[in-house]
Length: 212
Image 1 (spheres, rainbow, N blue to C red):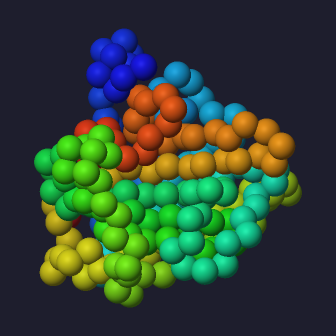
Image 2 (image 1 turned 90 degrees about the vertical axis):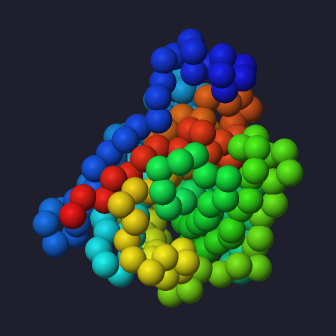
């Protein structure tokens, strides 16, 4: 199943959502995640809330889970090999050829990198894990009666090499759920329409309009 075939079959366009300033409204809650291939709802639901102000962008993931786990403890460890939530970001409205990648594990461990993806399909893609987002803060904690968990990121504009908030961001939000002894589940806000799942598809990034 190629992205083009899936898009034609499903008629799925990347979402576009207005995000109000933090001083004017509560964080914007995005639509629930779907499976990465776009074929339905995940077993393990995820919701994202987004807010912004002059200092930066705040992102919160609420994850339904019954066994949240992760053993990595060092920044920039390969968190995607275990359970994780992720956000990819780029300023502007055009489909990006470079973007920033952020991941947070249930243990609150951070992965951040600058990605160059010139063809949008991993051909020639490079990931600079030596890059660190200046001033970023992240945290994760359990919620609820099961093993539900919440991860939060505060991403300063200056950490994205921006002097001020941009009018528009291209973004996508993801989750990898890996039940111990079961099959992994890949879900996202804007389905990447790939099977096997591939999150590095910038043509599938949604649009966040920062409303002033």
